[in-house]
Length: 510
Image 1 (cartoon, rainbow, N blue to C red):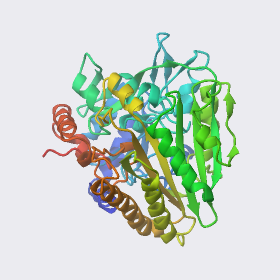
Image 2 (cartoon, rainbow, N blue to C red):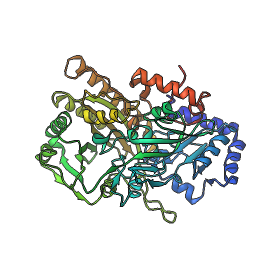
Image 3 (cartoon, helix red, strand yellow):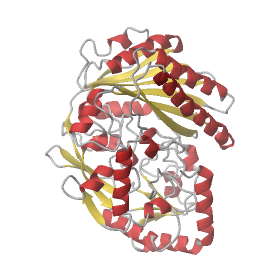
Image 4 (cartoon, helix red, strand yellow):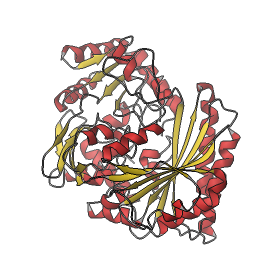
């Protein structure tokens, strides 16, 4: 894995070696009638605000190309072979790892014009990677159908899909990627192919959790599912309720009460903030008695209610995306994706323990590490407990599986670890805190395995939440890793995406 400073130095050196070539590809693409944005333009500066982390927004590409078709994407990839610049592909800009969907002094390919929603009338829809999930769902308005997608409406489609994608609907239908019927992909040589169960089936399988190693996906054909009124919102708890809350989430995942229900349990800690926020969802007008009762019994403030549509709930959840309002907004642009804060995500995976004392250890470790950086300007730490019960994994397996290949005989919790903070001068401090956080979490898990408090089971990392230093490929099953590598070598034998993209979890030849 290339450190942040390493890829940035490489990008700068390549740009210094071939500044004319970089300028030439921008003008070449523009002359081919592909939309190209340059620094100082309103659209260029606006597009760079469309990241969840201000650190990504601070990176300045030489230009931004925004293709509107697979053919235009193919032309961009073909032209990139004629220059030596790095490039990155951006969908919703949710991933905060610098260089994954952002770039300094290289070509940024924005998928914003690949924004189609085409419902086929047979419980399938074609959606573009340039959409947010609320836009994808809005495009299905009036059909009575839903896509298995992000739990916050503002999350982008593209990168989310390639990391598998966790949804409120996952306990019924598996990962978002399990619901893809066909990927339209531009390969490293510029060829446009379809990948599905009948054609390029190895690529079809590898794209479900394989990241940006195989090609650029320009459209997803997905299975949709019937949805009507839904119930959801938030419960807010004070920090003194922590023991009861942790017991409730352990019991909820271990004895999953209803596959139509879903939660995300998060704790937030900063200089003046210390509370719990529970996201709740039920696929129906209201949950039956017994689904969320253990949480409801704890003293809380509730915003949960019945929503007329799934879209309305997703849009409501955007309240938890900090908004940024620039001085100049292009006509028609309304929502922004960051608050001026820098943002990091890391992850760890745990089987569900027999009692909540192990979860308390995780929480205490997270709290202590967060306390250690409270002198960082504007810092806010967050931990999220995300259930992956057996029913989730069984649904994923029934739909053809994926590279994560989570076992169907174990209940898991995927833990998300976030920091947001204000200033770049604190990057190294937060980087070290992240390493302490997920490294210490793994040590706690191993300690509890050694003493028999946790089962010794396979624990993959969830790509969508992984920190750039974490070893995604080293944590999935060796056979999945090998399959992905062999597929990569078939579709990108020269390693174009390995050497020319500015970030991602690489699949180098062994």
